[in-house]
Length: 282
Length: 301
Image (cartoon, rainbow over all chains, first blue to last red; front, side, top):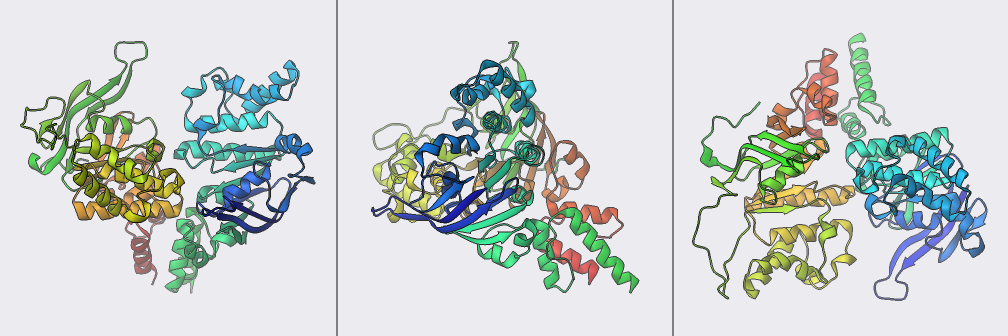
């Protein structure tokens, strides 16, 4: 469990360029959940993400990772081992030239025995579905493959939490799908807690729970259905809702009764067919 | 499906004839990127080029602006083969250097990563300076270009581009290309990586300077939904070939083969196609929310 307690953070403190990035954020991230944090650039979501593994330390309030305070320097290694981060740009986070070396980097730094490193490389490659790329040059991978490699590198550290900081926003649709499927599988099968920081709807729809941030505060919280069904609030925040949710909202305004929380084309097709069936039946 | 075949060639600002490109030819790494590409793009038109990763979209636009030289066929801009230019008397700048006006401005993917100057002004001025323009002309172009991307010149000109938000940096990078006053603007994935607000800003800007300056705009994207809202002409590519060429309505008429290429229909069209399969008599090519609402109202109310 990660506990975030009344967290405040200001960049460039004491200068004219001061920016209040977090203005008092409290939240609990439960073990095994898939949490999405949604918001515009500048809403504070990346600042929040960087607090989860002590890349940033709270100026006010505190962050506890399985009970360990991120301000406690003695726990820094333990916290970083537990909470892995995947960043936005796939080209900025790879350090090695060969795929297997990239994955070995973390475990080698932990000083693990050779056999253990080898077995972690195999299992990490397998868990993100890139076993066939083991000996490939990292520069020759596609963006989606690079992000999955970054995740594999983190998996080799056996983390409990993975934080994805806009990790799919630079990928093409196929790359995004591959990464999301991988993350979903790690969450459901390996019980890794996933925190996805994002502005992309497809990522949010997969989550168990969503926090919506605006100007350094959490402004909405709930399941994806609960959050997206608040079409007006989301529009006022200038955030996207799925096209079918928006269409249902407009049609309800025209007097066609449709559920508020439908998300997909499948659900919309069924709802319309049912509506017409009822009308004919009457 | 080529709607351009019967037109007079002078209407077209861009035309390719049997264009082909092979990477590393005659080596073991030889790769055919483009084969027999024939496209025609009208002056002032907004064209979207769609296709999965590796389909040859980026190679095509690099051929259109002369970054790559064709290994087969030719690229005509205003009827002139850009790789065999006719000799022309060139305009001279104040210092006597020839002024070269780029006809095609290319905005790469993630153009903000190519920003390198210390101030926004210097960054936008880089292109015009290299064209050999006078300081007054450079100043007025930078001012105009920043205005076109909806940025306050006085507020922003002396700031470091690196202190700006992602959406703002992208607009500065765009201004850097616009300041060269190209006739044709090509944007490679202009919305990639931006949040919804940033996407909206860039989308709105593209619409504005297209209508204000009458610029021919070509956008590469794999976002069907967004591109079908902006473009009036779509070219779909797959494995180095053109697989469809026409209006969005024409291109989306047959969803099945789009899916075989890993491309998806825009969601509203997907819905209408499903309903039509269920026997509903609905228009299948509704591109946006408003059209879809109207069409569903028509059949339901």
